[in-house]
Image 1 (cartoon, rainbow, N blue to C red):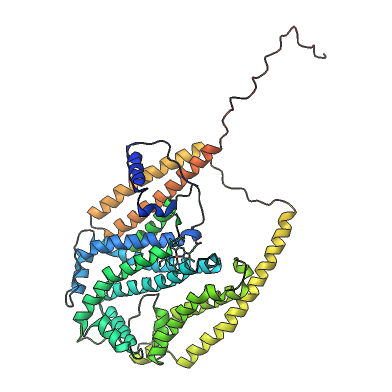
Image 2: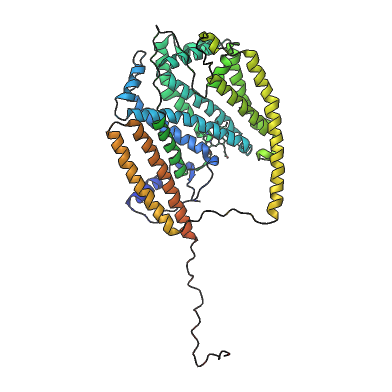
Length: 478
Ligand code: HEM
């Protein structure tokens, strides 16, 4: 369903003019629909991921004005962006938190597609390109946090270089091509990959991944963007310490989407097996899903084995992700002893998770099916629909006015916070502005739908009967 903006003004006309002009372009080969009422965001998580990609592109381009991909200046240039460049703090925080949001949304999008079996409707190409896109998204985020060249980045680069090197036959050649022969080469190469090569690859993949019909829900896009700004205000990203070759390395952990692999590496088992082979098998297994899943039905409840495998996989990912973060707090122990994870214990847990996770999920699915059957039976015995919240037109108007006034207040407050140097607070308030806008838009859309429901008197209605002449009226019994 499409919202019709009947009441046109100069600005709306201008947008229509642009939209109509694009009608003849490839861009419109893709059809967007703007939902006229609330729809669950699960079905358009991919679109939300794409929107974050655009936010990353814009903020990344702004960061390029000041960032210097030079070995001994990279960290200082980021510190300058963070501390002195006007609005640099905001742009850097939005860029960083958007990168996390993009990885998270892509993962959620993948799992939704997995459990709803959407890869079945001749979507195999979309699924496989999605897997590659997800992997490249993580590489993109990884190259981003490396080019700051903090202590943590240096550790990540060294690990990545030695993993690449560990690959049989092609390893050393790929390492030389990707990392060059030293940190000075590396920083320029990773920068090129981060700002140009990988985004181009992603755009190319998106061209074959995104279906023709896309849902663009303005309030949800605003809410997600608002959440990113808000998080930036409350949890501003750390700069870390500048890498100094003379200072011995401390303990650092990578970003959350890599701590799973880090846990495997910390078992100190063969580098190639833990850091390249296992993740490789995991990615290929996900890519193969549409070709393995032979169930005819779509719902997760009707595909118990596939669903139970998915849940087992999620459990393993969550356990390893947490394990990668966890470092014994006992500082009296030597560094290596705190970092190393006992491989026997680790692999034993991983193996045990398979029957436990699978068995438990399988049982839960059977229970869910049974309760669904009972719910259907109960529903057939009578309607039990929960009553929705109904707001009258007057209340909707008052709420819209209230939210508009709040928007004005928030804008003034954010502007003042920015002027007085309260960067975190300004970013937080900007996030709130976007979220309130999301609410406002949703309410306005709801109001339009409610207005459509009010019945108008039809002109064809028969005229109301004339009052009877008192003389003609039958006498009522006394
Ligand atoms: C990383 C960036 C990604 C972007 C920007 C992206 C974008 C999109 C978009 C815009 C759609 C249309 C439906 C929607 O909005 O949700 C879509 C659909 C789809 N995506 Fe993704 N996606 C990404 C990653 C993935 C991954 C990792 C997978 C799975 C491995 C995946 C699998 C699918 C499938 C199967 C559909 C078809 C849905 C349907 O037609 O019902 N995507 N994607």
